[in-house]
Amino acid sequence: MNLRQLRYFAMVVKTGGMSHAAARLKLAQTAISIQIRDLEREIGVSLFERHSRGVVPTKAGEVLYERYNELERFLERTLEDVRSAAGSPAPRPFVIGLVPSHMRLVGADVLIAAGTKLPATSLKLVEELSFALIAALERKEIDLAFAYDVEGRPGLVREAVIEDELLFVTARANAQDDSPISFADALQEELFFAGERGIVTLVRRMAQRLSLEPRIVSDMQSVPAIRARIAEGGASLLPYGSVADGVSRGIFAIRRIERPVPSRTLYMVSRREERSPLEDEVIGPFLKDVVRHICRASAPYAIIVDPRFDIAGTSS
Figure (cartoon, rainbow, N blue to C red):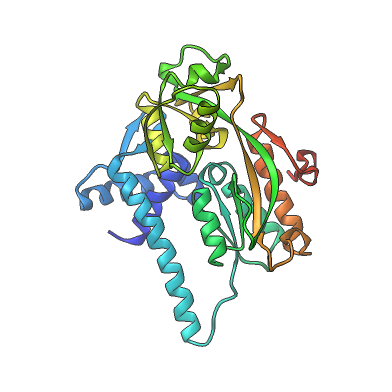
């Protein structure tokens, strides 16, 4: 097992398919497939469940994906320490934290934009759940976070960006209707969620106010695990970004939820002791484009809160 195999594996998980991973890595699909096959043989377990529209990680694959992300962060810190010890530390990149749904939607677009608009600035993207991004921001491991439902904290500044609608998501093969579904009817289904601190908390609170009892089967920390469970026949309430690629490939079906509409606020969060990144002459214009990418990719299931991020201003 080597790092190249693990990086290829992680890209397949993120993109949901060998061909998508190959396109992102600019490699032949057969090269990716061979590396994944060799990795599975060496470990001795199957890492993906394969179907006609792509792949989803097995439970073993979910564990490896989470461990790889931890390993990647450790290696990056190690390289920084080595350079520092040698007396030639590399310029620290500007680090932006994104939740998994937005990384899926705009991750590649953000990096491409950085390459054309910020040639002298190093940029790095980090993918985590909202609570983990905020913790990393407070530890000064990242410079900026786009996170959901952030509570006010003394050392942080939050700026509301969009209200992101949650959708009722099922496997396309099990979908019988694409019309809107009431919140009460959605709660009658067996639901799977990603993380007690995330969407499941919102759903529980809304259900309690309406004197409803949701049928929550389980909650997990892994978004790939939720996607895999839905593909197997489960259901969930998720933002569009979490399943957009699967919807386009015919794996998932989505229905809007009404009476009431569940939604979450996405905030741009930075540390209070620093001036707003939007005021920076170099990074500010680029960050506005990042948010516009998020808004455009989330439409028509999101409402822009801040007029500074009007989609009409999005660069092509």
